[in-house]
Length: 351
Length: 266
Ligand SMILES: Nc1ncnc2c1ncn2[C@@H]1O[C@H](COP(=O)(O)OP(=O)(O)OP(=O)(O)O)[C@@H](O)[C@H]1O
Ligand SMILES: [Mg+2]
Image 1 (cartoon, rainbow over the protein chains, first blue to last red):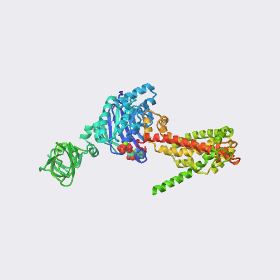
Image 2: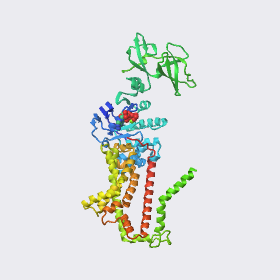
Image 3: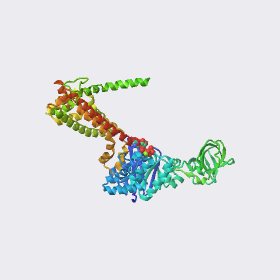
Image 4: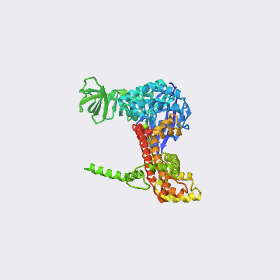
């Protein structure tokens, strides 16, 4: 069950609903076999992008190409794309195995051959013992696995997944994330995966695209998006970075609005521009004193780490994540702490 | 206290609804020539009479033919109309919906008269096919009301899933929406069938010499009245109860299958 993935090109795609613009100048190239994730807040146009590739919506402008061939004139069923939906969308009247053989049936594959291939797909998702169950007799995770097997049984070169794990609990989601990644490696198809969960996107993707208001803001590897966000939106969306404003840059010093002067090189920064810094790169010293003092205004316990919100002298807030050794107490709210940051960790943002 | 009041109320209402039946059954089982209550001696004589009398059997066959024909036509056209009414958006949608429901609201006599005038002009009186089509029109509102209601609750992403997995629009409909609609089709089919099977007024106007079962009963009433009529009534009731039961079983089975699918408007 291998199919070399196809390349997908969105070229300046535009989609409007009446006056509302759902996709605007949406461009993205996905390489063959790549796992691409669309990440964005609710209403940012992720589903619309997938649906226009699947042919469920007609686009108003631009072009979509699979392997360089324009497909926007092709009806949905001729696009040869696999798809997994958020609410599974299994056929309630068909048993598990007949759900999976449906795409083969539609393609005129002989009955025995279809059965054999469906069983193979079912074995891949390790549900071969449930072949004759009806969908309403399955758990959420099992349904999702069946939906996945059904989407790949005909060896499509493109697989679309629209928040396939959205309805499942966290634990199951993490298990299935690993499985999906593993199956995709086996199959080799190109995947476009939609989620609004940034950690899911970081875990799964070869590359990811952050969307807002129907546009792609930034495309890159998870490391690139995590380490070097280009805009305030991306910095805030991927990994909840601190976004700070540079007040002034002097020789060997720089001033961040609301936080004070920091020693270090700031030549890569522009006064008046915004910078981002990851919470785990803010260091705190308990009980000590230093150049930068703040009060703890909030603490969130994660087990292996604690996220603190620090309130600096003139009420500017900044979040810091501290790794935690066993037995180490979470500091009480209101505690005065000293904090510092390394100015070379500041990432300049373009807007 | 309220429980007792409710119970009494329930018994009274059900009793009122069942009263005609409670009388009909014993009357139909009489051994006498006449309608009598309570019967002096019991027999199945009048049931036998029904099957022996060729005119009763013929009338039943005519009614069955027209009933099945009208059901088939109204199911087919009614379902197609429902799909259009629910899934597409056009300007005259409201008016069209009203037209499909109208035969239920307009008094039968008015429809009967209108059809009579038209059928007379087109020489369609005394024509079983024309009568079937007229019955299909009477049956259509039941189909359209039930099927549109059911279609609105259908999760379109299931049909989309079929499309992306390789089904043409028609095949996707057949493999996903149609199974979902089966119980609704069944229920509306039963209603449509009985709408036709029971129909008297319109049939009287346009049937000419054609005798359907209700027309035969009607004719019997105006000539002589023997206990065959209550026997026919009891048999009709049993057949309807059977149809309703099968329909309800189909509906429950379907409900179980769809219950875990969140209904979403797509
Ligand atoms: N059929 C429609 N008619 C009108 N507006 C629509 C329609 N479908 C989507 N929209 C609008 O287009 C925008 C993008 O919708 P889309 O479903 O692509 O968002 P999304 O990124 O998938 O969001 P979510 O994470 O909530 O699924 C939304 O603001 C939505 O309201
Ligand atoms: Mg969506």
